[in-house]
View 1 (cartoon, one colour):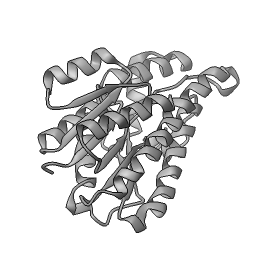
View 2 (cartoon, one colour):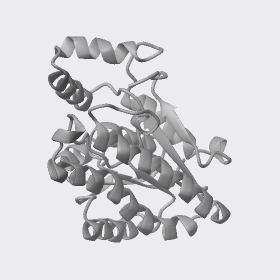
View 3 (spheres, one colour):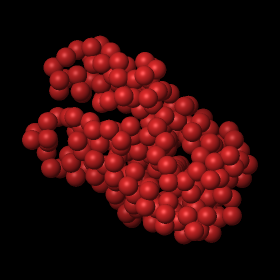
View 4 (cartoon, helix red, strand yellow):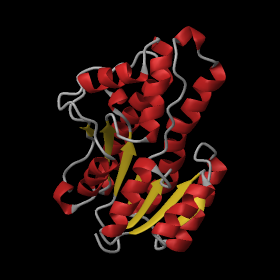
Length: 254
C-alpha cells in the first residue's frame, strides 16, 4: 500500500494506534487525530512519520480543522478509518443519566457523521481504490444488557455504513464496518470491571463469563483488528463493500 493516504480518527492509542502503525508499516502515509495530546506525542515519538491533529471528534469544528490538516499533510485522502468511540455508561436503563446517554451518542455516532461528510468528497476524488472503514462492535449485532447507549450507537454505525455503501458505490468508494469483539487491553479491563461492579460479581468471575461466550475461548488482539483493516483496503477486497465483518472469535451472545 505504498503512498496510500490514510486518516485514522481516535488513533493515538488502542485499536486506532494499532491500525495507524499497521498502515504505516505497509507504506501508507498516515494522519491521526485524537483528543489526547499526550497520547499523540507518544505515538509520534514511536512513529515520527505519522502526522497528527489534536481534536475532539464530537465537535464538528474540530473535525473541520482535522481535514484542513489532512489537506496540508496528505494532499487528499484514500482511506478513512472512522475509529472514534467510548464505552459509555454501564447500568440499568432506568438509572442512566441523560447526559451520559447524550455523550455516548455525540462521541460514538455524531463523530462518524462529521468525519464522513468531510471525507466523502476527498474519497470520491481518489483513484486508489478508496474506502471508508467504520469501527462498530460485536455489540452492533447483538443486544447488550447494561450497555444500552454503547450498543445503540454501534448498531447505528452499521446502519450508516450500509447506507453509505449504497450511496457511494456508484462513485467507486467502498464502505465496510469492522465489529471487534472482546479486545485485550486496558479498555476491556475497565469494561469488565464496570460490568462486574454493576452485576455484583468479582472481576475474575466476569472475565470468565466473557470468555465463556466466545467460541474460540480467547480475546482478540489489536493486531487482529488492524489486519482486517489492511485487508479491506487492499486490492484483494476490491469487491467487498456494505459488509459488517466481525473480528471476535465468534461471540455467541452478550
